Length: 252
Image (cartoon, rainbow, N blue to C red; front, side):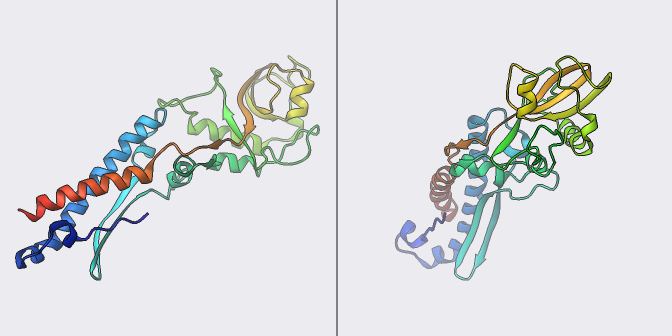
């Protein structure tokens, strides 16, 4: 999205002093407008999303104004990198434009992890149109924002990748292969139905002793309608703020 301002249209007839002051006033006003727009986007994210993490709130950024020829340019955007996680621009895009849920690094990794259960199809744990969602189990370790902890995601992925078919528990309810303290594993549709679990969906389970606890449930990749009005908020905020602040700065 592109927004342009013409000082001549905003100020009318220009005198020589105005012409000298315009570049400085415009730069200050645009920078102030971007700063205020970032705050409004942060406030909107707190209102629209359920308990968003600080990384998401702080992902709204802006480039300070730069002179390019006769034009002064700047931009506001969503952070597009994340060295240790998922880029906000990727997972927020379906909320901004609408579309299919973004598959995180964890989900993609499960798509490259083989399902070792012989009752399955021999494919990966997750198909491209599926995701794995944490349950409300007491054994899901949550951070203060209510999300499954990064450490537990890492443990689950390591357990599934390092498992062998011999490690799978017995399909008979209430019987494990051995009395283990904690072990994560994946059960596909065929096995879940065979052991007659109440929830017939595939998922990730935790074995504690001879008891099984559902930690994650496999479900279809959801599709979202656009609910975070990033472009509308940005356009309105920048326009209103720049018009006001430019006039304030030109009169100083």
